[in-house]
Amino acid sequence: MPEETHVLVIFPHPDDETFSSAGTLARYIDQGVPVTYACLTTGQMARNLGNPPFATRESLPTIRERELEAAAEAIGITDLRKMGLRDKTVEFEPHDEMDAMVQSLIDECQPSVIISFYPQFAVHPDHEATAEAVVRTVGRMPANERPRLQLVAFSNDAPEKLGDPDILNEISDYKEVKLRAFKAHASQMGPFLEDLASPEVGGEVQGFLEVEPYWIYNFES
Image (cartoon, rainbow, N blue to C red; front, top):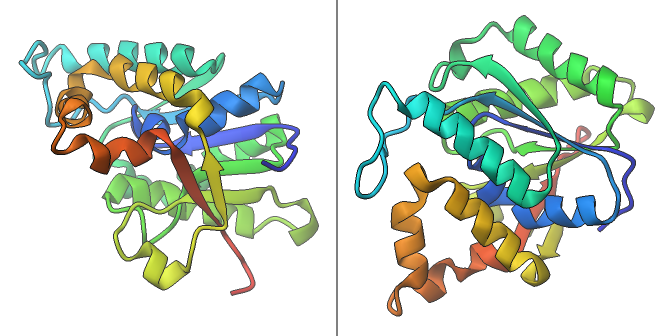
């Protein structure tokens, strides 16, 4: 991985960081690179209430916030920012307010790289709104001052339209870290962990514990 001075992570939901980047972030932290994670919501509108259910609609926001804290601890993140937006409404936030929030984080952290979602390839409306705010904000900066955008593309057509990932982080050494982070998100991860343990399905999802792909955003293209 490239040497970094500060990694800023911006995702909208608890567990976005685990699915996409737990191993990568744990490695940065082991290398002594500061990591700041700005999680925009507490995921209070998630469908899952545990498997079997142990949360209610009323208790889920608190539970997911605690799960976020536990996952961050498992990864080694000590600078966790809870930005206070509401789940499933990020797409409706005014652009100027979203961009100001992103710019404030950049001004404070002075990151050499930002990890977030890739616009148009992020699947969920909150993901897309987050991605667009990051790209808009960084795009307004002078080219020589921009942090690198190391972005996650989850949609199935990403490799076809974006080409192969620019970065493939092999994270086998951090498999147990990522698995602990998955387990920390207990209300949401029951089905995934069942698939992981299944002889029939487990091999298909092992990739999440072995490689983390990213695309570098090119403002010139």
